[in-house]
Length: 272
Image (cartoon, rainbow, N blue to C red; front, side, top):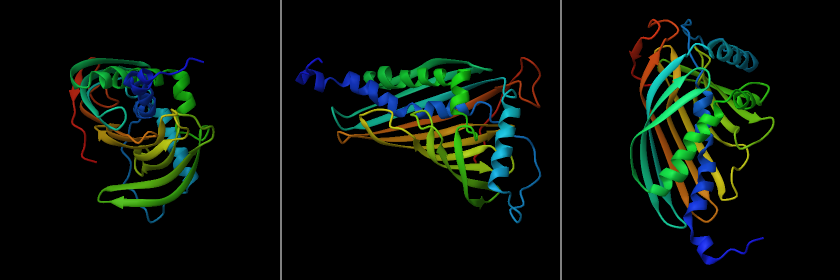
């Protein structure tokens, strides 16, 4: 085994590469949401809530039905990372455009970038590569939110204004760094995940002590698409990395009920 010198310990490049592994789950959550679409349903009556098993069944069935509905979209992503700790404080921002084409194609174009080149090269670009990897069919099968991969426990029902959700605790059946445990909110009308508070089921890196992820989705026309991601990773050496991703300026191509072939519709994410 190679003996590490002081230069090796102080070199931040391999450390930043490891840090990207701690943040990659957010990219996998984004890729997993590609097929989440909604259909018009009657208003929810929580006076007679569904059993947890029935909610999960409908969620899985709807996601399977909708997987082919979202044929293509364009969007803008803004990645921001602030790192405080060993071997020094750093921050950066990168804006990208993304073009998705069903079933597995995503093309990213960097619009602007500023701040730490180390973060841009060793973290942001790794996140984009990780999301493209997550798009592959075999990876989507292994990480899909269904009863093959997860155990679900209904813990309650929540209503806020027009929004009603079933709340579940989820636990993966086979822990890995690409699946998660924690709480999910399932929209009671569309049976699509609207929010998550989770952590990786398995630590993605020795350097990472803990990662906490908040992920929200917005209803864009007939589709539920990523709106905001915030990942906080605590590093064993005492540092902390806060990654945020804003998803804006969606343009849906060929929506299930809307534009004709080739037409692009400009949509704004709903506030929810």
